[in-house]
Image 1 (cartoon, rainbow, N blue to C red):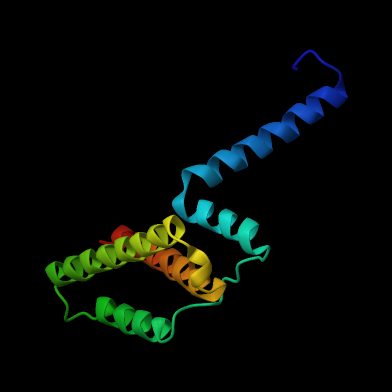
Image 2 (image 1 turned 90 degrees about the vertical axis):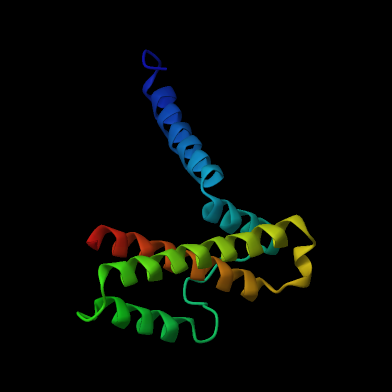
Length: 130
């Protein structure tokens, strides 16, 4: 399409963008889950829905990691526990998608996805600081 008309070039660029977005969505477990939920429930996920007490636990964890009294070994242990928590959330979500997930509420699925997103971002930030 490089030698085509301006209209064909524009269409080619637009379809390339859509194709790249689709690939990114299919490749990433969380993005794929969000997409499938949007199709199934015909709703948009809210980023603010989290499990009860989740943020309190995360703030406590942040304070523990920021403490000058904690050793790097203890930090590594905490980060490892976070990785296990992420894996647990992912397994729960995958099992739910493989079973009849209509029995679970849309809100529960939002909570699971948002908690996973939060943990993944937080873990990435902490690992960069080590």
